[in-house]
Image (tube, rainbow, N blue to C red):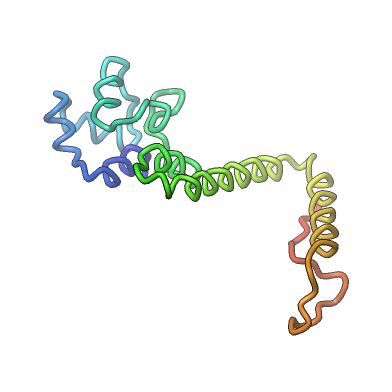
Length: 153
């Protein structure tokens, strides 16, 4: 799913209604949604108006529809949220998605694996220092931690 499709669904819009309002051909719009071709510059402002969001929420740097990931979904949900009481939870979801994305990028580079292992070891140690023991919890062997250690080969 792309961000455009998600926004349409979230805002209860149809591709047909967007196309008829903004003078866009249905086949052309489908090509944009399916990432077959980029959105021409002349249609970006019409698309922003129809979706109610700036292009950075639904187009990548080459003007193709952005694939929907956890981070993109959280950004869209936060931006479209009208209930102020929900915004802190949505912001937390976005912050977590950004952390996961940064950690994935760190793991993609094999040169970082030792650094990642050291970080996980630090987290494991701090977890054991700051967490209160649960007397009813089953005992784990000392070499097992709450996290999986990624080893470099």
